[in-house]
Amino acid sequence: MKLLFLIFLSFFPSTLTAQKIDSSNIKISYIVKFLRDTTDVTSKKEEITGLWIGGNTSIFKSDQKAKYDSLALETIKNSIKNATDGNMVIDFSKLPKPSFVPEVYKKDHTIDIFDKILNTTYEFQAQEEIKWIIINETKTIGAYKCRKATGRYRNKNITAWYTEEIPISEGPYTFKGLPGLVVEAYDDKYFFHFIFVGLSNIKEPIISIRNTVKTDYIKFIRKRNDFQNDPVGAYFSATGKTIAKEQQERILKLHKSRNNHLD
Image 1 (spheres, rainbow, N blue to C red):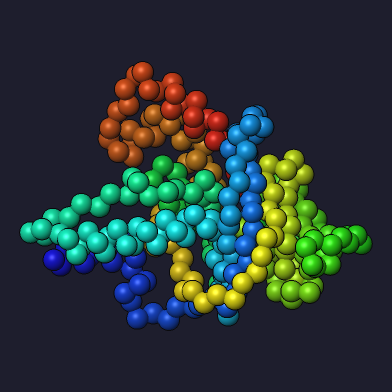
Image 2: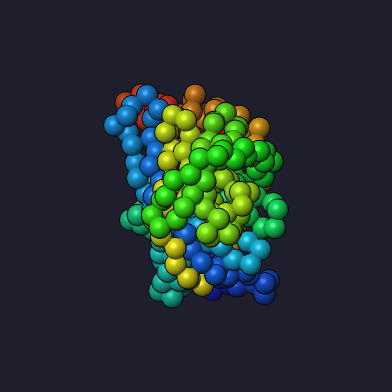
């Protein structure tokens, strides 16, 4: 049974440690609209995402990812409970998976980005801070009067609309640092578009992903490019397993088409 406990702890270590965990005070909900493939307008996806904000931390991720994490925890608990002779079966294959994968965890002034390649989650710091230019232009979004700001993030020009009526210097993904909450943000090609849909008072623990591979942005991009250029070879390197020839072309086309990234 000790082995089962260690497996449980490896998935969700912070649920069982004595470390102090911050909790959210509010949750901001956004719809994110994005293309999987920048060459195919029919590849557009929509997903609800959440920004949980606490005292000195926040986390932004897909609502579906939050549900997946919760269901995965319950799956592990039930597997441990129903284990026979120290053996258990953990099956995540039927859990609904998110389409929007990246997560952003902010603590004080440090922002960490979490993203996946195959089944490995990588963690790296967002070292590029957006230098916002506030534009003398306003519009009303929902019930809030908003002001326009523009900035450059990596290779994208970002437009953000923020409201000082919610005086929180936060926003979706890494679009933070303005004198109010970002309620809408998009790049100049509308490959990504975040739209505020609601605010609720909610108290939940703010926990960043554990069991990640820590890296930096340059190394992560290099690895992601290698995978997209040769997903079959990357899969073999990661698992030691080969993919049947009749499936290789389909897999290559699939992963080359998933070419839209926020960075």
